[in-house]
Length: 217
Image 1 (spheres, rainbow, N blue to C red):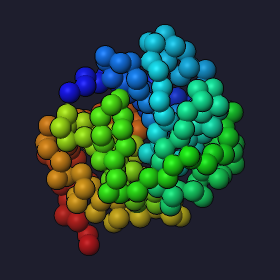
Image 2: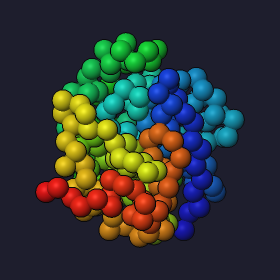
Image 3: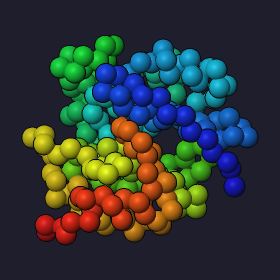
Image 4: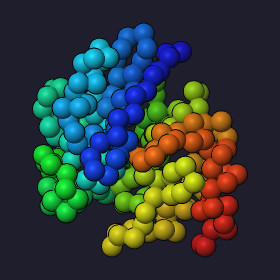
């Protein structure tokens, strides 16, 4: 089985975790959620000698996607994800970037929208696509149960969950997605989230106050 490595580069004033995930042997990999600071990401990729195959978006928020179009242009690769329900967010990245002080943002249209039930190849491994709306309508999680590793975007955090205080946010939908799609994963599943330190499913099951409380539906 391929051996994967990961580098987490916080980008934008919002310190979003852009992740570079690659196969140790072939050095082929992906960039997940390039929200900005594209020169920093390009330098990291070059210094590590990684051959980027695709850009992957977990959802359409500006701090996760504002640099995707520029990075695609530099690398000559395709953008995969998120779910098409976040199209309206990707079409308004420039406007959102002005509000959050993120320079160089471009609106972007992915080359491939993703849906639950399929898989996406990341560092030579198949990752299951899980649609987990609530933080945004099109939020996705990518999970590989063999290596017990997931990329959860802003769905789940170390000790918290994604914000839902947007006009389109839905807290009940988010908690439902976490309970029905993430909590069935093995306790040992480690995850990288969109902000701050990662965690494991088991640790969040045991101590995350948003998960321990009874669902409201």
